[in-house]
Image 1 (cartoon, helix red, strand yellow):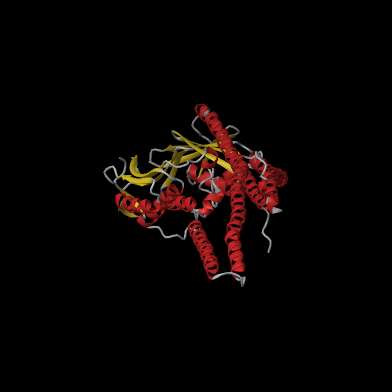
Image 2: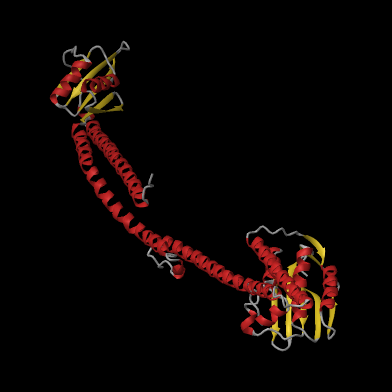
Length: 465
């Protein structure tokens, strides 16, 4: 089942939001117009009541014949004659009774019998009018003013507005959908281009150097393109490292394998003496040991790259490790090299003592391998919250062009000499990896002809110095 496209999803959602917004806007407009119409009608009634109240002083006391007009009949007569208002007057007689008269500018005063209140008369008008009339009841002394207004003109305007909204809103919704579609296409277009360019990267694998085009015209899409480009840079770097590693590993393994095969073939010759056979087997053993050590180093690096290498994290005394490494270095160095240590009061680090010993032995072995005479010194030093072990020698040193690559896998400054000395080209790679797994680092400072200085930095147990 195929997933819907982002453009279709956004268009459908925008269309739904637009329809809901337009429908709500239409309803609110009609409701607001109806409310304003009702308010306008009531204001008109207030003005009519003001006029009627100003004319109350012109009426004299009624003295005509008694009338038996009922309130309902009175309402019918008022509606029939189209009078905008009516007035009732309540007079108390000497006996304490009440007499209510209906007054009108176009009719003589008539007594309402039985007496009824203006409120009841207003309710009667509203009930007989079926909601088509609005009534305002105002009390002014002994007079009650009831102003009647027709709602029909206002209702017709509201109905007309609602009809217009029903006709125009679907058209506006259609136009809004088309506009939303164009806006979505314009917004999703850069994203589609980035997706297309990304799909082309790596087809074939040699095309990993290609990148998505930025800027795209949309800030968020440009940020995504930058992120993809950074990801592709890491992928390209990893791919190049893998290709280089495969080529280097093949080359490094081919050399001892070639020696093994050559020595085996040479030893199989029936003309070889026992001593020659023994020498050939010794060479086979050395080549096998070199291959075994290389495979072990490769497995160690692979476990470190996959975060599968166990590393302790505890406090330990660096001085003890340095003393052990000093003794081993002195044993592996020539008689013309003086090995010493400057513990500088000692210090404790946080990390793995076994892995730290392995790192320092690797650095010391490199120093002994490249120092034929002079000194090799191990020393402790502090820098902020880090404690370091420096391995300094007076050997041949490392030139600037090699200094940046000495931690690369299988890289050798002097390839043939390092191989003759038993090196695999993986020692410094492993040392840096083990240091970083302990949240540390290795720095190097070297001058050709004057020696090198490697420093292993680890977190100090007692914080900043």
